[in-house]
Length: 332
Image (cartoon, helix red, strand yellow):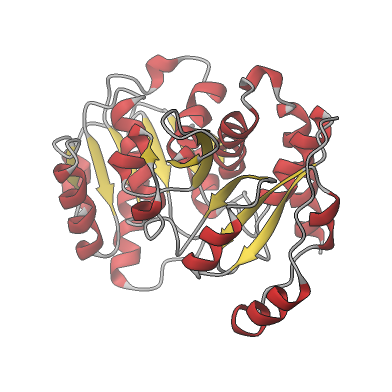
């Protein structure tokens, strides 16, 4: 195993930072050959460290990802200078805020306008300097969920697609459907018109919004050609308000059309088996669990961090570990 110089985070530094940030660094950091961070807020339920630990154990690497529950960008940019740092998963509320601090963005990161992965590359012009690079692997998570699980791509290619929701996950879904899954148009369904308007405006500004169609009513949905791919990016709550009930009826209309495709249900917490998923299965659709998107975006991250191809990573072990963790949570 490669030997590297251990960099110690001194107690005075921790004492200075912890009161303000309520941070508690895992003591394993001193024993790891390399370490990364999960950088964001409300991280307790995240399975990201578990996913990556399984990958590193499978590869025989003494690496680990630690939770950094913070939105302090200055602190984070200081911590990434550690020679043992290999990269980070970036989550809310830092996905957009980190972009001005990066030296390079992948096309997906640039076009979606959000970074969920920080990786390092050597600066070709300055020996010893590492470039901070940003990627958006959420897009790849959506793409691979369909590519890896739907046997016949004709089910969704060269047909309309549909995205339910208006947040960051919906933006990544729109981009994946547009760039990789050959959607002819993309229906947007959401309870909040202002969120849909924001998504459409941003996508058009970035050059891939011309295919977007806002579906506002059940009557409009009934007139439209059925989608082949659906990505649902909303929580698993029963509809209460009139706008939520309209969204549910629009989804039911789309699921009930003659063409049956595949639906990626992005919600997997507290359970990947959702009400929308059950409705889709009853209507004859293939349902892809949201854990698939989570797993494939994580595998894409480890491709950046390890330099290995997905075929060289322990994907099967990751799926087993995530399934076991979900089973624990459902039985708790």
